[in-house]
Length: 234
Image 1 (cartoon, one colour):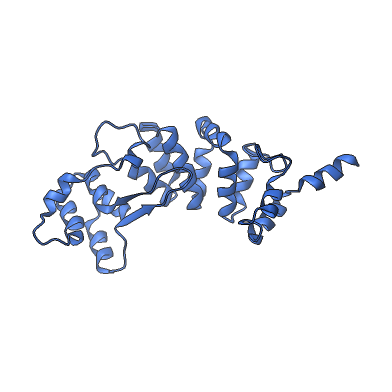
Image 2 (cartoon, rainbow, N blue to C red):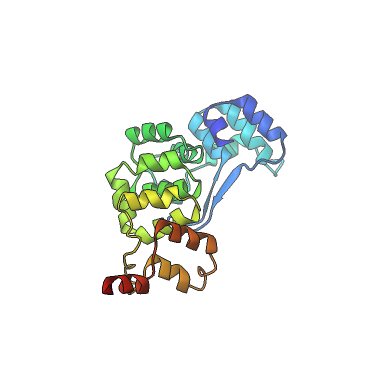
């Protein structure tokens, strides 16, 4: 839906609306990179400056019969959480949605073009890395890892991003981080004492039953601290 809106594809939007099963709002739950917030399809219409398109999107969302869709249109503003991701002066600048669409569709060329126009804030870049992993956006992730500032952001929160890469259950992502030396597979985890990432999964009550991820770690060559100690003695 969001891509259709930003492309001014009214026929596709009408078709989606007729399916009666689409979602016009995306909720981002509070996590390591963002406080809970929502973005709606109506926000994307502000970016297009297409009044007819805005009417098409906003009218079906109005529940109060006395409310005019134009009133809703003129009161829409960028959520503070999203505003922090791209340095903007206008509270109706929804261009960050384009970065999200590129991630959702794994369009690396589109994301690269957007970065040339304006690089998101460190917070925004961190969010895009996280969403790239969450959406298995291999092409976008590969493109982002070519940027030094992306690498610097990952290095500051290595364990979070590596665990997010493991959550994809796709070997490509953790391997990419290891290849770029953005995580040490058998190094000790900072602030955790003498434990490796494998120890962390074995010992943590919430993680120890994540067999699929533990097997993924083993396939990557992960070892426990004790195993490494035995190897050193020999």
